[in-house]
Length: 296
Image (cartoon, rainbow, N blue to C red):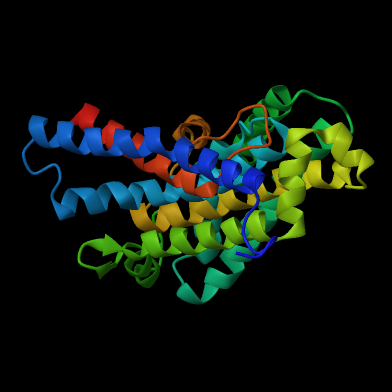
């Protein structure tokens, strides 16, 4: 093989390191399926596994934003759960039972998530508020905003077609929600792994000072990772309400800690600079399996 025609030793070591980080999660999935089957015969049936994967799909979408924040800044976004609830309730309110209103609902949901993420990023980057404090405060603000807009009422008036599309099986018992999550994961995996922007996120997370000296716009990138987190969490809420069929205040609260745990289980480094979306997906499946085993 000609020199330069294959990956370097450093690249091979990095790829092997990434693959090794998936092993604990994959092993946990296997053991949980076996353990669940022992505890409750039929646990490993296609119907039950598809239900678990459907639930993991929503978490995987939330993990996209959480992973970008952790990898790029070494921070944690504690407002993701509030953004999920906001996306579910406000988005469904704008749909108002009409499928024709879906584009407007998606646009409003995205804008609200972007606004929340932007405020988080600005507060952290320019006002030097610690990420944990800023995002926790923002979580309370978002919940208050959602309650003010919806008056705290549950969302029950969803278009029947929307619920059917989100929760409709496409292969056996596996619903379209899995395909939707897969599309988002693939797109962001390509963004992070194949584009200059994505590589800049990893460089910034590894050493922000050195990244700045290399010419990267650290303030912009630091704010933008929180924008992505807010937008993806809000969209996940809109997906979740379509799958569940109704929405209520606080329905996304559990996704904050679950998303953090999932990306860490998947091999992300909490100090930044390392992590992958595939690992986040694996972590999401592990957590949903664990939850089902414990409640079975």
